[in-house]
Length: 311
Ligand code: PMV
Image (cartoon, rainbow, N blue to C red):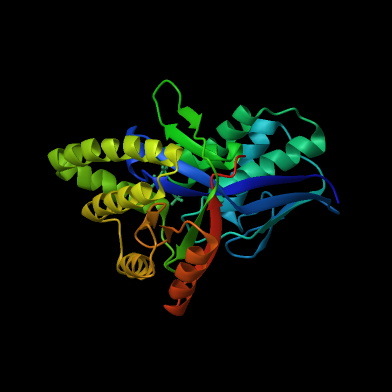
């Protein structure tokens, strides 16, 4: 067995969709990740698609998306020939909301970097993963690949002259629960839907953007102070804006109600919405366990995570 590379999964605490328009987002890496392991192969390059489970050969039509991902990474790294298998494995949901596409790109790039001693910097890994993100939807903010590359709890602002990323310090990591609605959806579709809504109602959106900006600034301060009650209230307010944006869904609302009834400090969708995942803030192991149990009882898959473990 050869080298391995890891890409972290992420949870957006504040700002999905808003970040696409240059407003600040707050996101954290989670313990869930995707790993790529380099193995020798008899002939040619092969890999396995985490979504379909298919084994694909590089250059074949089958597994088109994974082939496109490999094409970008091979172009950027200069590694495009050989007899090897990039063995992919993951413990995160590939249905959307955990940044699985960014984690895929980061893990493959890091694996090749280690195996061939390419000396690729983190910035370059991030850049390559961003190029891959563009395959999955046309206008990514860059938040997923940034968190997947650098890890930790980050303040992220997309900018024309380059993105801004700052680490947010916390007194101690805090417990949260990710809940999978079971509805698979496409990030690109959700981003395009929001774009269309904004074009129809520019004034409504500029009001929402202004309100959200205040929420993000207050949230950063509350996180730094360890004011988790305050953070929860702000998450709920962020969710109200996402509802107004019409990217929430019946299942997400059902999950949020279950989480808040079980005592979560705050709950909202995380990722692009229209299905995908929700996140509940649940400081303390007991509350985390209680909220996860209620969601499981309602039929949803849950992941217990810690926010603020530095990358
Ligand atoms: O659905 P996810 O986990 O890929 O998150 C998408 C976040 C968006 O803000 C909706 C899009 C983006 O590129 O930032």
